[in-house]
Image (cartoon, rainbow, N blue to C red; front, side):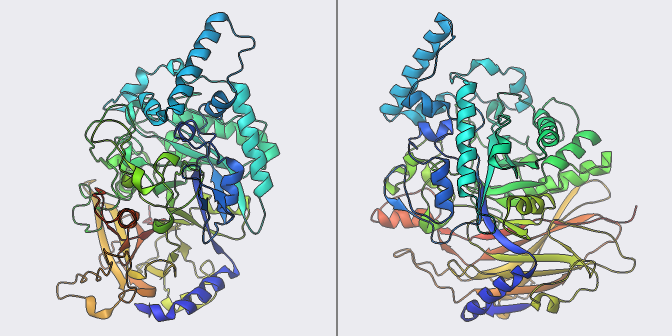
Length: 619
């Protein structure tokens, strides 16, 4: 184990630059909504559209859609996907500002449109757009399969007007082209497929490396086209062939999917088979594991022996009426990775062999994931004084401080272009952070030595090693070696520790997980029982300041699994923890004078998650 103290942070930064010799870390957000999304507009994002969103991500100042102050990122992003909802794309904005075109409609159709326009305009003008939006959410069901069987696609109060959706998509494509600067900033096209049967979040962000003009030949596929993800994948297959573009779909907020995101059955209530598993693996190589609406790594109910499992929980289903939150295996990354291995034992294919990223899901058009620069989920909860307001009259509804100021997507790519970023995602050479730009390298192989990480470009391919997202074949008589190197974000907390999380399925088919501390900030933290003494919490609750002295600027580990069994398949991923720092809820509390119950923690321990490396035994 090697550590570097905070005093060495400058040299760590120099190493970060050296890493870019062959591949570089690119930082971005794949999940960002503008005023073209119906829920962003009803929550008073009137001013930040696709162009403003891309400019903000590039580091330019824009006006906040809520409080109207000038806002700006301290450190620009390298890429952004504007991913407005495909459903009713741009319709509500046009309805409010201009009105829905009624040419060619019959009398009763026009009457319905006029009535809907009145309802929506009146609600927004009165500041009741959020309440109106909540009333349109689905009734709760225990299972999405049951909800889908009773779903009426034509029953939405929101009108679908294809001509307006085409224009909105064209506007987004034009904004992407205007802001795309190959080698400097990638403005990537995408949208959200927003399926939510019975309150089970089954949303996917879809992204493509196509340029704007090429993308204008199609209209984004949404849940108003089909309620079945399999139909989305079929559409992606067809459209990819027709356009020559690459596409991927990225599931998000599995934490509020009622167990359905990583289920053992499909939305058609059929057992997962080999064909389904292969298709899903192809189109969904990565998942969004952390964002404003909570963290989806794991949960204390599922990982009771993990002291860091209780992190940024979000127990609020997206539905009209409140029901009690129940964490399930299909809701979280770690348990889903194990479930995928269980399914593979039965059918020969793992449907849940995915990498990970983080993103924001901001509906302000502002991709901000810093605790001290958090601009709210919606324009309506962008100020400290508005963050305790609930989404509905129910005391158990979500509210502004329930949101986490997270996360970011980190991609190891050869160059900053749409195509290179997409290829890195397809090979799963990605990782997630909850906001800080923690540098992370993770390799697995045989006969490796940590000194290799000191080179400016570790030639892992020539050594037979694989990076995060890769698969390790067995080597007779040898256990794999894992190399990890993490570097702190100089604008955030220093590092507490590096952990490696292992998951496997035993002979009885049961799920198993284990967490190993492999590097930490100070040697004297190791206790007699093999556990680590917690890193000191130095956050000053009166000022929001903290000390980085207890953490390390850089940590390196060379690790072998002490319980490795060459006959047992397993996955390994890295979790990096920072020292405790102030959460945005504490900073807001201080801004309001301190006498406020935010109902959320004052402290956060930011982190990074790597994509796994899978070990496969001989057949």
